[in-house]
Length: 306
Image (tube, rainbow, N blue to C red; front, side, top):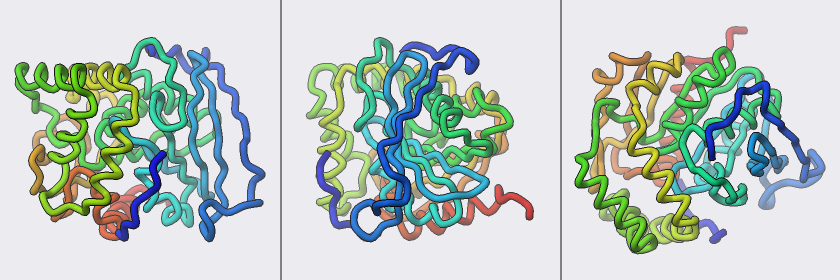
């Protein structure tokens, strides 16, 4: 895993009853801080369904758990500016989704619903009772599918530069061009994609960090997930999640920007969105302080009543 920049700011899973989950503790709770002065965390490995290992970190305490889900070809370190901040008030879980980071790579079929099954396995293994899923990009779609699996446990989905317009579909020729690029020149396509997801004057070190992470992922997994995501019916996913959906999205200014169509999405779910200006596709990394303020504001709506 590349060092972090100095930046300020599967098959479908079986039903829950058939999940086989094992939890291995890889940390003596409370004995060591992560990365120097940060608060203690527990690194956990959860095994479910197809026996693939899902690796994550758990911090904090609270009646409500925030489960952070990164996007396509990312990993849990995308949330490095959030996990400590929110652990003061919540149980915080940051995952490497299957195929990414330290999690298992040996799945035969890669689908968004398979990733949603992983989230369900983690929630059950950690005995989380009240969950808010925070998903960036692909993680937003996975969060909707996971919410459907866990009625009564997931109380909200918060998307991060994602779920902008449930009715928007890329033209077929554009989809084919992207998939062909991923299949034939994975690293080259990743570099172009990352560049197009950042503003022109984006931090150069952050850009390199993002590219290095994405280029290190398995091209076959990445291609299969992208193909599955292109076929995802977001209208149905919003309807079937049956929880409030809130987004913190970019206000624009990068090549591959998609405007947020809140009124369109409100036809299918209890939907709301706020935006951040001057950022690209990764607002939690580009302007973490502003992002954290907005996330905290959004979370107030779902605070438990004392």
